[in-house]
Amino acid sequence: MFFTKPFAEMSFNDMMLMRAPNINFTHAFTTRFGGVSSGALYSLNLGENRGDEPENVRENYRRLLEALDIPEQELCFTKQVHGTNVRIVSDADRRQLFSPFLYEADGLVTDVRGLPLICFSADCVPVLLADERAGVVGAVHCGWRSTTADIIGKAIDKMVSLGSEPSSINAAIGPAIDICCFETGPEVAQAVTNLLGDECEGVFFETAEGKFMVDLKEALRRRLIQRGLREGNISVSDECTSCNSDRYWSHRKTRGERGSQAAIIVIG
Figure 1 (tube, helix red, strand yellow):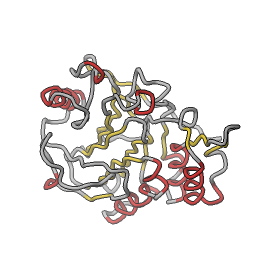
Figure 2: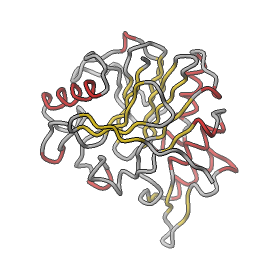
Figure 3: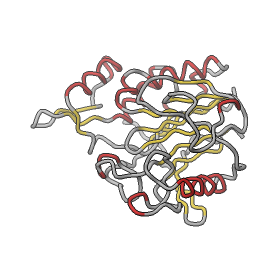
Figure 4: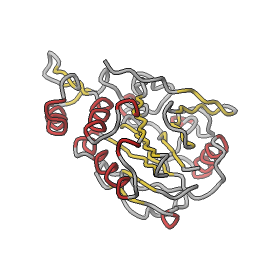
């Protein structure tokens, strides 16, 4: 059976962040707590497209950077489309909040020190990758379509192109909807089978009603091992965003009335 050290809770003023046990670079997985947004978006909404007031979102980012001791600056994030594009980014890819997106991508990789990478989620799986030896990091948004189309494998390939070796990469699989709540049709189970081959046992099961309960976190963990990561270099959050919708944003639980949390990582 697979075991992992639990993620650690980190507090700064009224902000609550989660930190993976196996990544030493500055990073965090945000929760709903610590921002200034109101109403259905209370309180730490980091999504620009959720109908929030721009000044609230900007203040939420200011607070997040302060909590992580990251200098205020333009960050690197993209328009996520549940695809498989993973982009190697540099300082030229920094973007101001509420400015036009530069491109669509669901994964970002860099070897630039001080460049914060962000991916967003609200049930999908956020994955942070870090190779301290090579000085390369990644942030990947993994919905079921991108997961089964092997976006995580593409992210590993991009890191390798910057000098990483898979056996040196640490991965943190963050809070996301878990097998207890992720009910799907048979097409998702089939896509997981196509990805993992003979190693898909236990990643999903069929219900009496003919639906399938799927564990995307476990599918990603196994795929990372298939791509050369050491099992001991992978940590997995045990929190389900749907079960803990008072603590995390959950698209399914709120039927879309929600904000966005983020996974952030920076070399330095």
